[in-house]
Image (cartoon, rainbow, N blue to C red; front, side):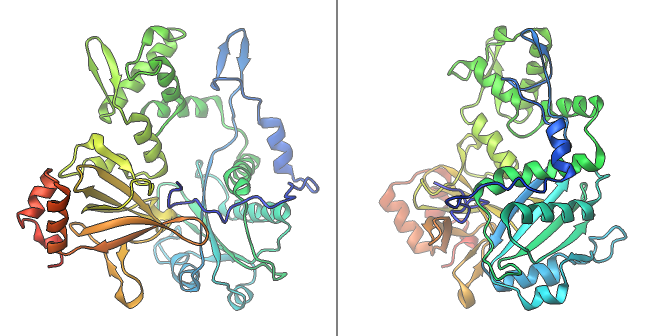
Length: 419
């Protein structure tokens, strides 16, 4: 099953699609020099009789989503990109790109939103975005209508790039999944490196230190998984040397603070969902935080909702906005009558119903959730508010006896139920 964010059958590789090699720019030439061949078990240093290089290119986060709504397209162009408080001096951000009036005259319902955030705050965002679009056009053969704005209202300055769904030759714009997952991210790194140069030894060492406490799945976690040998108990005797053992111990201590492992009987034991939780939090940065919001369910029973779980009835514990300024993505934490909790990623603010019947959902609402596959093959969550009588009947028929089921069956907590 596909998740709701950044996954769509829109992104498919066309028959005969080939990357274009002509006109390679200086960023690509520089990337060929800086991008090393990675040895197995990537990392840095001398090991196994050979020196293993690390990727010293600059880092840049790239995220993309698309919409088929002309209303959402207009909101992005006229409000979101240029909203107050996003420029360096706290004023409105300024648009740049193709001719603005020409863009407005040719706006299609389909539009793509790309978020570019270099790790270094020294990057020239406007130059980065302009070169990024140029290379995207060379790669796809499209002549894009695009607008962008730089935002400086977060810890990391970033650019929002808006691309029209129809290009200047009247062609429909499509980006194959291969282009989204590899080319966009790799090329953004190459462009940042062309601007700023490769990261220094000190930069790389700082990154290695940050990796010890990162709330996401890292290379160290992959090594811990190897040392578990199919169990959840970590065998540190298998560490290659004392330096690696020391780093793994620091990582385990941080996983313990994240409540993803424990220490007993002289060793560390990882929780059953430690890997899933770290990967989910790397993708949706509110996942680990959501465990602390649970009222009726053990944190160990929180999982990512993919649609495979079928229809779930439960209570919304928390509505989160995820990705910060990168998008309008939200997530719902739903605690089910069955004693399980679900983290549900969404492309927009959660609601029940459509059009004039739409009701925005909030903490405490009792709903039923199921996943519907749309015409593009993407799973879309469908949420329906439930009445008190409906919920009590389902509790009785299903024989649910957990804390949430007992509360709702007794009539307590009715503020979240439409009676």
